[in-house]
Every structure is written in structure tokens, then in C-alpha cells.
Length: 314
Ligand code: UDP
Image 1 (tube, rainbow, N blue to C red):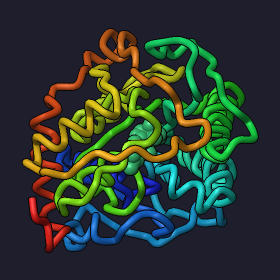
Image 2 (tube, rainbow, N blue to C red):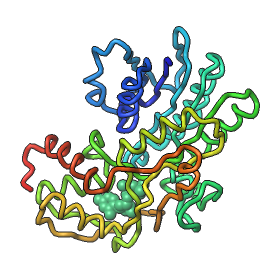
Image 3 (cartoon, helix red, strand yellow):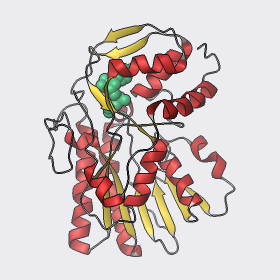
């Protein structure tokens, strides 16, 4: 297949490109480097089945030749990034998604959009099932991301219902692994950076809020299975192993062998109190579940971050 990947220079996008090429597909990769990093694709520069186009997908563009599948993975994704680029975030989820859907329609291609567990907002149903409509603040600081992705899901369903495009919607939960941006503010790079430098680890609030972390290769496998399925409604992809942020900080200290102290800072506004995917649907539909244990995934991630932090002490 010839597959267009938008957001290809991002953390998940770049791993997806690797997987698609390994499966024998051709990839046309798009990114405007707003939050993506060319270094994530540098190893693919000379690959015969890989083509890169620097492109902001909110602007008009054309792709020459046949396209079998379109993956729309373009968006700022960390709270720090989307707070810095709220308008770009809303634009890429709305205008950008529309353009990618139109491309899929014109090429007769399949379409997959990577949505988010943020669609559930600060969830009142736990664990989160796909049929839960969420508890989203439409005007809070995270709304630019939440509503952008909710719009992207709605537009995707509209193209399916109106035009019969073969669409898929993935709701991605917290994911970690090599190629995460060191300074994107998310808890995995933040804690690893602090632990490896021997600096204080900043737990927000009292650290009782929960998250569930999925290793990137597991997520990519779920996405690859989903893009071949005929399921039109959202499918959760994430690891159901839930822990508090304080437990997670302690875990990182052990894995890195760090002596960093843990300090408590103010909890950001609208920070979800709990998050854990119900993956019953993905298990049944895709025969998928995460395989990489947290310690194993963290070891790979720590090795990557050590290479990025020359003065890592731990
Ligand atoms: N967090 C933290 N310290 C940090 C960064 C994040 O305690 O230095 C917390 C944050 O408040 C949230 C969780 O870790 O409860 C996950 O945050 P992240 O930004 O990774 O993603 P989110 O799941 O909130 O989108």
C-alpha cells in the first residue's frame, strides 16, 4: 500500500512510519515541524519507499499518484505544546483533518485519525469505555486540544456517513518511549530528565491523580491493526495498568537508580484526576493488548534519554 502519514515527524508518527515500512508499504510523510522533529525521521532519509514533504496540512496541498491509506496523526499533543499553540491545535484538528479526509475521499483511500483519551475530559466513568461521552470543559486551558480532537472525530464520522469513506478513530491514552521530546513538559520526559540529572522530581498536586502508560511499540501495533479493520466508531488504545503519579515518580527513581528528591508543585487547571482505558473493544475487535511491561519499556526509554542528556548523573 502507499500510505500518507501526517504528523510523521512526531513521536508516535515516526514510529508508525517505521512500522509501515517494515511491513513493506510505501510512506509519504508530511510534517511542518511545529512540534515534530526532523531527527525522528533522519534514519529514513535514504529509504527507497519513504518520501518526505514539509507541509502544514491546514494549508492546501496535493499528493501526486495513487494513495491507499491516509493516517492523520498531526497535532501538538503535550499540554505544554498545545497551551503554547492553542490556535494551531484547533486548526490542525479541524481544517487539517478536513483536508486529510478530502484527500482520502478523492483518492478512494482508507482513513485513520489518532484521537485521544482527552475526549473523556476529567472522566466521571472509570475505566473509560468508548461509549462514555466525557466530561470536557469547553473553555478551559485544555479545551483547544480536547475540542480539536472531538471535532476531528465528528468530521471523520461525517465523511464516513456522507461519503462512505472507510474511516477509523483511535483514542490514544498516555504513551511513552524513545523519541519523546525531552522538553515537552509531559510527565515521562520531565521525570526522566529530572531523575537522570539528579534534580528534584516535580509531582503536580499531591500526586494522587492516576495515569496508565503504554509503550509506543504496543500502541503502534494497535494502530496498525485498527487501520485494517472495518470499525467506524472509536477504539481505545492504551495500557490498562493504572498508577498514581506519585507511584510513577517512585518507579522512575528505581529504574534510573536516581537519588532525586520528590517535590510537590501546583496541579495544573483541569488536570484529569484519573485515567485508565477499558480495552475490551480492542481485545475483541483487533485481538490486541499491550505486551511490553512498564520496566521493560522504561529501560528502552531511559537508554534513549541518557543519550540525549550528556550530563546525566544517574
Ligand atoms: N505531571 C507531574 N509532573 C510533571 C509533569 C506532569 O506531576 O512534571 C502530572 C500531570 O499533572 C498529570 C500527569 O502527570 O497529572 C500526566 O501529565 P502529562 O502532561 O504527561 O499528560 P496528560 O495525561 O495530563 O495529558
